[in-house]
Image 1 (cartoon, protein in one colour):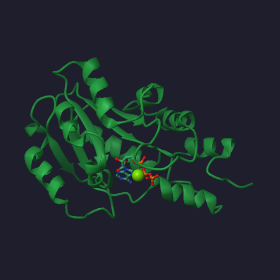
Image 2: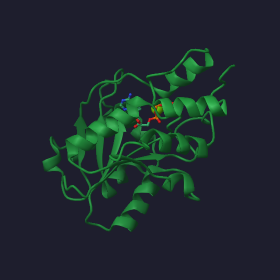
Image 3: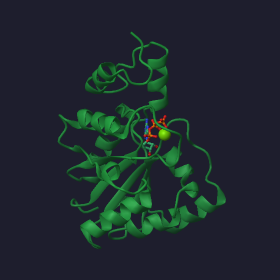
Length: 215
Ligand code: ATP
Ligand code: MG
C-alpha cells in the first residue's frame, strides 16, 4: 500500500470509544501510512437516531484525536448537504484525490456483514479498497452474495492490493469488545464508562449531559 493512501474509518461514533481509536491506530502501523481519518456520519442511514447531535459527535471525535497526530477527524459527511452514504463519500474522495491515489475504507466485521443492505454496496470497490477488521462477537459465515463479493475482491496482504481501488482485505487486530451501545447503556445506568473511551470525551459528555447522564 502506498504511503500516500487515504485511509479512513466511517461510523456514527455515538460516542467515539477506544475500540475505534485503537483500531485506527493499529491500522495506521500495519499499512505504514502517516494518518488515518475518522469520518462521523451526519444522518446515520443504517440505524435509528443517535443520542446527540452530529456536531456533538464530531466534537467528541475531535477531542479524542487532539493529542494523536496519527489520527484526524474529517467533517466531510457532517458538512455535506447530502445524506451520509459511503458511496457518496467515496465519490467525493475520488473527485478530490484523483484516480491514482489509493483509498482505503476501514470497517468492522459487523458493518461488513450488513453491507448488502447499503446503498450501491457493490460499487464501493470501484472507488476504494475495503479493509475489514475482526470484531469480537461477529464471526458469522458470510451470506452467499457477500461470499461471492469476497471471492471477487479478496487479497491476502496490503502488497497484493490492486492499485487505487478494488481490493478487500481482512485483518485481525487486538480484539476489543467495546461498543458505543455499551458506553451509552452504562451512562444511562449511572455507571462510569471511564477507560472505555478517552477522558476528554467522557468530560465532554458530562459537561453536556449527553446520553441521559444523571447528577
Ligand atoms: P453502536 O453500538 O452504537 O453501533 P459501535 O461501537 O458499533 O456503536 P459505530 O460508530 O457503529 O460504533 O462503528 C463505526 C465503525 O467502527 C464500524 O465499522 C464498526 O464495525 C467499527 N467498530 C466499532 N467498534 C469496534 C471495535 N470494538 N473493534 C473493531 N471495530 C469496531
Ligand atoms: Mg455499530
